Length: 136
Image (cartoon, rainbow, N blue to C red; front, side, top):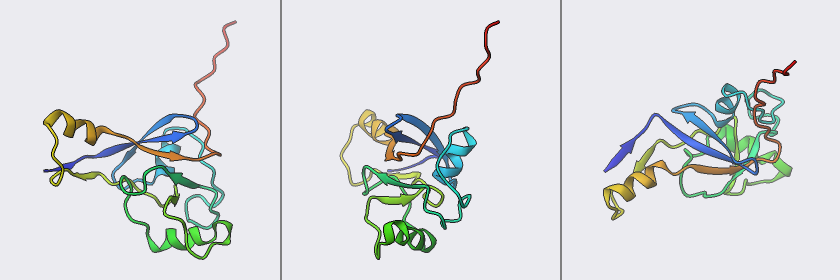
């Protein structure tokens, strides 16, 4: 059984903010669409590496790295090869297809697996501020 979705939730730590990322949308673009600040200087071209983050579970949740992302990650702390848990938010897109065919779950358990969020850590992330309207 393969479940196909149109979006996936990414939980950004340490703030605990959930971001709904649409199909084909980068995590950076989703954060900006929702009014959050994710550090960037290049605007999403993988040149500045400010949007670098760590992913909690490297085995699922994100599509494979592109050549552009790998090249950008090599500039993070001047590494030759990026670590498995390092990604760039401007390039990382979520995996929307969850293959449950090899797993033995009840229907309720399968739904719970599909609904789990992807957890990432980004120290420079700042959640959107609610509109401030002083009471005069």
